[in-house]
Length: 225
Image 1: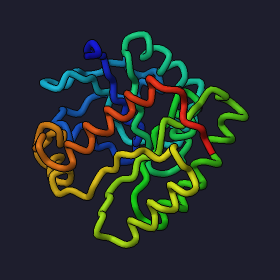
Image 2: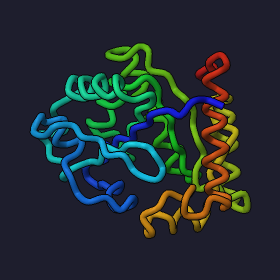
Image 3: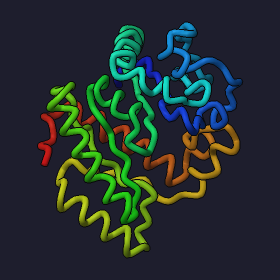
Image 4: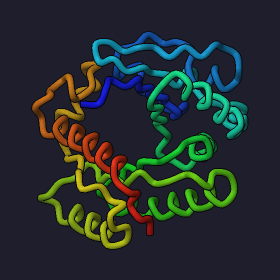
């Protein structure tokens, strides 16, 4: 058994902040204010689950996003001194904040919805990761690609999975996250699915994903296409 780790979740989707609602937290200064230097960084511990959260804070504006990667790098360097794992939850689009996060982080875990347009968007993300490596963060690695909203009864799901595995090989995680009503319901109760229904297929899938990521970190890196 690995000792308990200090884990921080940083919400970088400033346009659509969801963590406060999902976890039932009171609004407070977060990432936006920390990047601007207008408020002291104050991650909040979420009980009873034990991890820490730095929410998005107020809505984004062009000035916040334009602060660039140096501000994000300074912030993550400070966080690394206090936490074993810092997970940055990025916006679904390739915004400036997403690129800044790629510059500042060690690795990227890519959720891939089992839809045609998501597969197309993955190609653009991979090109962006390549550019970030060449220009600013040569040590950035791909932790893996996770197939989400996976429905084995759906032919499109099978096609997307086949294409992803054919093109990216072992980069695609063995674990898939299924379409599961419990995952969708959990935020409305201000609970993570692991607490809302720990025996659900969704919760079991996320536990399996965590185990797979831990296993990969103990073995040589997966080759990247």
